[in-house]
Length: 212
Figure 1 (cartoon, rainbow, N blue to C red):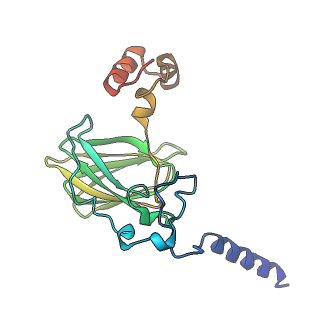
Figure 2: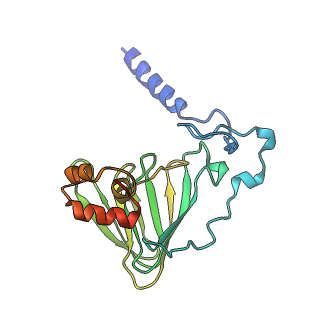
Figure 3: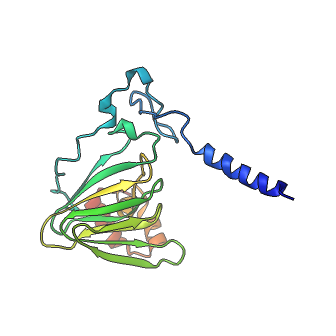
C-alpha cells in the first residue's frame, strides 16, 4: 500500500536532483557563443577569482538620453561567474523624470531595491490585466514576476538609484515601445494591431528610429 507513495517521493527526488548543479560552477567562456542554456563553461584550470567579482556597478550610468535612464547590467556576458547559477544583478539610474518604459524579462523574475530617490513602479498581470502600482522610497523593495509587463518612473525631484536582481544569469529584455516603433514593423499592421492612428505611429517611429 506504500508503493505509490514511494514512487511519488522518488519522482520528487528526481525532479529536485535534475535542477541541482553537477559541478561547483560554470564560469562563462565568453570566447564561445552563448546558447539557450547560457555560455559554455570555461576550463576550470583557467578560472580565477576575478571571474567571481564585478566592479562595474559603482559608476553612475549616463542618463542623458530620451528616457533619462540607464541600466548597467552584470549579467553572464559582463560577469562570467553568474553563468549557470540562476542569478544576476544590474544598476538602475533614473534622472529626474526618467522612465524605464513598459517591458518584460522573458527569462527571469526581478526584485528591485531603491537606494536613493522615489520611484513609481508597476506591473500588469497577464490573465486579467490588473495593474499593480506602488510608490517606492529609499529601502523599499518590489518584485516583478517573470514575463509580466512592468515599468519604473522617477516620480521624485532628485535622481533615483536602484539595484535590481534577477532569477537568471540573463533575464532577457523586450521593451514594448521599441518592439512596436523602433524597427520595420509596417505602420499599417501596427495600426491594425494597436488601434493607434497612423499619424501617431509615424511620429513615434520618427522619434525612436523605426521605419516602414
